[in-house]
Amino acid sequence: MNAVAEVDAGSRVLSYAEAIREAMALAMEADPTVILMGEDIGVYGGAFQVTGDLIDRFGPDRVMDTPISELGGAGVAVGAALTGLKPIFEFQFSDFATLAMEQIVNQAAKLRYMLGGEASVPVVFRMPAGSGTGAAAQHSQSLEAWFAHVPGLKVIQPSTPADAKGMLLAALADPDPVLMFEHKLLYKMRGEVPPGHYTVPIGKAEVVRTGRDITIVAGAIMRHRAVEAAERLAADGIEVEVIDPRSLRPLDRDTILGSVRKTGRLVVVHEGVKSFGVGAEISAMVAESDAFDFLDAPIVRLGGAEAPIPYNPDLERAAVPQTDGIEAAVRAVMARAV
Image (tube, rainbow, N blue to C red; front, side, top):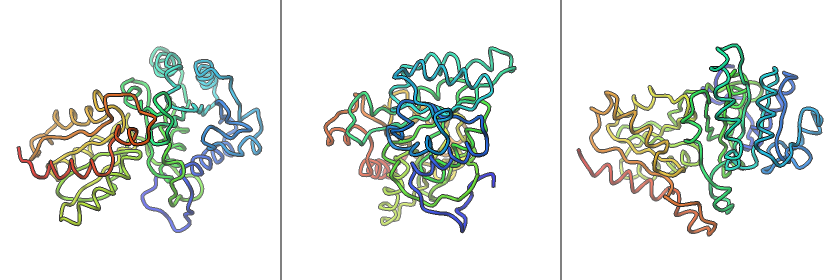
């Protein structure tokens, strides 16, 4: 099974975290070169309990707690990948990847290029990301756009348990470094997940909901808020097409542009800060293509506030797009013509 086109009859209901754990276990059972690394991923089971009991199943030689040094741990993972292993390195919070930028951006992303294609770096960096857990400014950021800017890296952002499993397995089969951003609010979300080994292709978006009037492009937790807004809008006869990019680098241009040509309107929603974000890239992509000629209204971007994520829960919610704001943005675009 190469991709999840539809949930098969043997699917079970798993949480997002359980689906990731199952993917890692399947990969480790099938391939002895797959190893896990990170802070507190062993006996403790990971900061968000995603690795769980894998240390009991595979032992400390393959499920390794690293010192409290993101730069050092990421460097060991990159080095291990160069020697033929397939490391999965878990950051406790994606924010802490800022401490390992040298290894991710200057080493992992560039070594295949600098060595003339003679070496590859098959490492997967798992990145718990996003706000909504009251973890405050240094533990709640959405930094995926930073890394999507870097040639040589692949950046994925699964939004469902089935995609989390399938995309992680696809990442492990990829010869290049892959960063998998996992929104922390999704870890407990449950959904149907096919059994066994399957992959969800990196670089292929999903049309989550079809519609004729307006396109929303939204990933991670924003996918689910966009669908909720679309269901509300449908009651008033506004049919929204919701596209989940799933992969930011590479980005599925064809699916997004095809939808915009059909609907003539576009709203892009992401949790990261609005300026210089994923929405800016998608908006520019549309503006520079023939899809621009099909627009009946200006493109609208919704993103995070120009501020660190607050600790106060009410301010935290106000700092990132919510369902009400997405609904209001769609109504405003529908009311406006070029």
